[in-house]
Amino acid sequence: MSIVIRLSLALLLLILPSVLSLLLSGWITGLSAGGGEAINMAGSLRKQSYLIAATALSPADPIPGGQPNLSEVVVEFERRLYHPSIQNALPDAAQDPIRVQFNALESRWRNEIRPSLERDDSLYASILLPSTHQYVSEIDLFVDALEKAHETRLKSLARLQWISLLIVFGVFAWTLIWVYRQVTYPLSKMAEVANQVEAGHYAARIDTQASGEIGTLKTALNRMLNELETSYSQLELRVAEKTAALEQNQTALQLRYQVKALLADNEPDQAIFDAVLKVLGESIPFRNAAICLTDINPKQQHIPVKSAFKLANNQQQGIRLGCLEQDCAACIEHTPPALDSKELVFPLLEGGITYGIMPITLQDGIKLAPWQMQVLEDVSHNLGTALAGSHRKQSLHRLALFEERSVIARELHDSLAQALSYLKIQVVRLQNQIGEQPEQAQATLQELREGLNAAYRQLRELLTTFRLQINQGGLNAALTATVKEFAERTGLEIALDNHLLGVELAAEEEIHVLQIVREALANVHHHAHARSAQIHLAWIGNEIVVQINDDGVGIGKAPERAQHYGLSIMRDRARSLGGIISIQANQPSGTQIILQFIPSTPFSNQESAQRAK
Image (cartoon, one colour):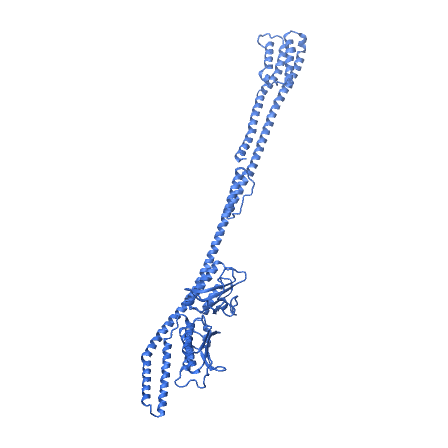
């Protein structure tokens, strides 16, 4: 039921008793309005009765008009007896005491007292006064009855007013209680909940009982609070997601910046790559990680790379990956990175060329988030860019060195080579002119001719050295071309076993290694009389080891004869590399040449290199 209807009913209940009380009070007051006059008029009948008795018993007045006439007194008595106030006070019920008393008074007056007054009866005159006393007693009873009836009406009026007052107070108290329970208390709870919501407690609800408009308002407010809490929860969730995304972006940007700073400010070497892995390990939960370099073959990218060597890792005592034990060879054919994979391998690419790989083993139960995968892919790309930049620098340095050597080769060819050629011609002419001279002169000329031939051959080798170029294929391609050249020119069976794939050497180091190999193969061809030779290159510890074996006659006790400079040139080149070269007999036959040096490129261990020097 509506609150307005209930309040209207409450007000009606408050007003209705008052109206009824007023109506009843008016009615009772109307009934009691002539009661006092009737009582007074009835009381005056006693005086009139005594006045009639006194008038009847008194002697005649000698003075006319000096005392009232008996007839006048009787008329006055009857006027008062039948006065309207008394008649109105008489109830309609015949058995009512007032009606009974009045009928008795009126009957005695009409049938006894008045007839006796009209006749002159001395006997009656003697009993008139006692009869009057008795009649007055009856009048007293009638007056008492009127007074009691009047008092009863007044008491009823008072009782009715008290009842009306109690009803009004009861309805008022019930209304107050109902208003408090149904209006005031629910509104106070709503205000309390509103304060809680204002303070940020969106889970607050209005749990008090309510009906009508207040109940509707309560339901609407609770529904609104539910929607507000849901909206706020969704907003908090979105804020948390955005905050987490911003934190992830900040972490990712910080990682990218730190890696960029490391690679931009320094040449990429083992220490820099170790620092990169350390930076990644602070934000990405991997257990093991490494950076491995692979061989570069830009002309044959479709051919899979078969070898790599480990440059950096994130552990002091070596690294253990699922695809990586002592080197990186097992990681080359690893599957592409996946979010649910424990072992990941990221290629170090730049311009479609693979410069290395970055294998990673995650901790148990850890899966990388997409942003972490993106960071690792970006870092691997940055590493590939850094390696590509280092290769380009080496290529530029190599080109500058080759240009310088080409200039020297042209100058040697234009000057010393032509002079030696002229001397050879003159020696031949001289030998023809003194063909009949003694054998000693012929021996001297022969020795001079051999010296010139040796000098000319060394010059040609030197020109070849200066003109020799190493293309983008690097040292491995140059060695392969050299092996093919000597095999075709000399008929030797030459095997190349290169384990330096992915190792970046300086341009001077590549030239020295290549020339030592070429010089060794030239010695095998000219002096060893061998059928085959083996070339082996490897990275052992911190050193590059180059080994050339043949199955020839072996090296003599005095290998460095006059006018034979090949071995001394190889030793000079080894000293230029900061390493050593050993030449010894090979068992059961042949010669073994071993070159050992620590590379000076950024990919070497600089501290170890300094200790070795």
